[in-house]
Length: 118
Length: 106
Image 1 (cartoon, each protein chain N blue to C red):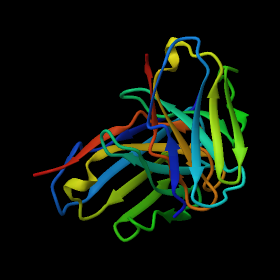
Image 2 (image 1 turned 90 degrees about the vertical axis):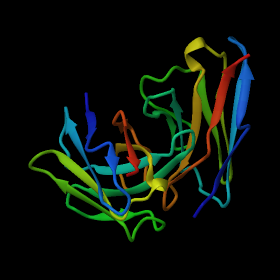
Image 3 (image 1 turned 60 degrees about the vertical axis):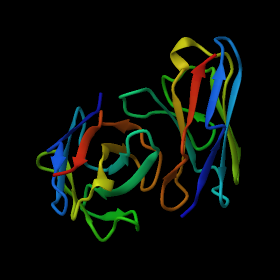
């Protein structure tokens, strides 16, 4: 059974960089697309972007200037960096998997709350 | 961006009832639509993809239909475990989600 687990700091100061890692277990990171999605508390879901196992990426245009997603196949992990954080970036961040680009997401991590505050 | 609009935003129903949630796209997305169930404090769970294909392990009381711009999720006979928030997701190009429909116990 594939499992995804997010990890990283729960508090990020304004103007600093949010960094999260998603560790994939129970399956290989190869041949899948790996995404980050966030959910502002009490609100809906926002797609941040994805990385393919070969390093190809695509990002939500509204966040593209601040986002980098990368993959480390040797560790079965992929990561999110969001620069210049503000309070508006406070959200639960999820990692998730799809078999093809921009497709349904069949496995999700449990989510991690990141607060942008000093 | 393709905007996804769900209705209603909140729905109150009783165990055993049949309920329908609608998702409308701002432009045609063919059948590139998924439905998820989310319970408080948990990640979304995939229910249906490609508008009408039931994900493995999901009870058959869930069904999806539609194409183009209008889609529905139907639960044929509500069970206590079904009270949750439901989201649609389009993946025709850049992926976007609906705002959610909260299903409450009447």
